[in-house]
Image (cartoon, rainbow, N blue to C red; front, top):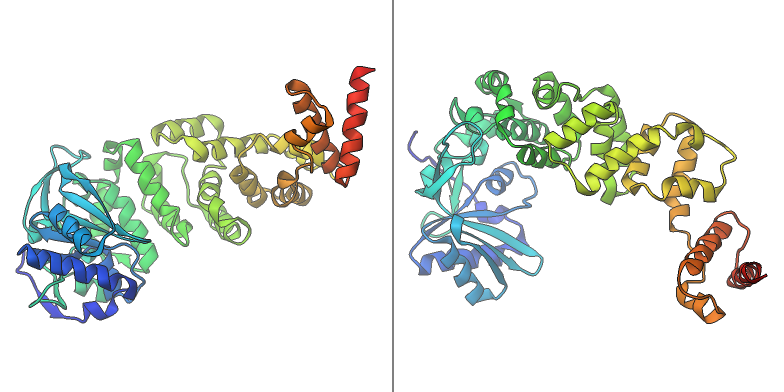
Length: 419
């Protein structure tokens, strides 16, 4: 490892103004405790690239938890402590930052979580994934505004390179393969030649990584502005095939992801991406992958439900399908699956039916609720549920339009049951 290189840079002037009081308080807290505090990682990289800073990570040569608690004493706010790792998260309103004790790492075997112990700043930088993330900027005088750059990260930023720190980097932690491609596409960089050689050599090491960790990395890929770029690159390099032989990042996916961004509500987009990504898989392959990634919850539901919708294409293509019948088909399914089906579907009638459901029908409810029905005289229990269902069906199909018409229908339904 070379000696720290210090380059003059007005770091403080490039930080988001809202963070300035927090960083000033952090620097003062560290100075009072006679500890050295540094801005590290992605925040510094993005400052050097003139990109927006989203996440702020600080490293202390000493006790990070003491710094966070001293900040709380000074500014108020909240501190969440992780004593085992010597880290703390400081929050004040909508702002937050992570403060960590400088540490070093070792790996018992490839794919293992690292063994962590307290270390120096240079040891902390040496454990990081890429040179562009292995820089630090002191946040206290007399070195405020300098960059400590032992691995020539600034040079790699200038040359727009993603470079690992040592030849065994992907062996120690193969999730770095996925991060390399994510940064490469996000920043419009490219893999440094030796780094690409090592990546191709070590792509099989993804088999040493748990499904949980691979899933988390893939979910991060899907939060990117254009995740299809990283997926296409991952296919070119054999990364997707190493996770599952039938995963792909082909032209269909690029087209559909772009379409999804135009047509899908933002809160559903990541789930829609994931469902579309697995759309071409058969049932057995999909189930194998879901088990491998330990995928559950709404994301898994949206994937399975999209496959269910593939089997309902004939019904969805019926131009005379009643709104109530459409809701019976789609109500049990996750909205993200419906949104993904709109993008994946090539039949124009089916698309219209799916859009009508997602944008209008799924939100349509009768004016009368359970409390109103009790006032009319509907007894609680199964009868009330059936009448509410009948009211919604009548609303959907345009058989009633007003509260008064709904009340008349309820009276009619009650009379039928008692006659």
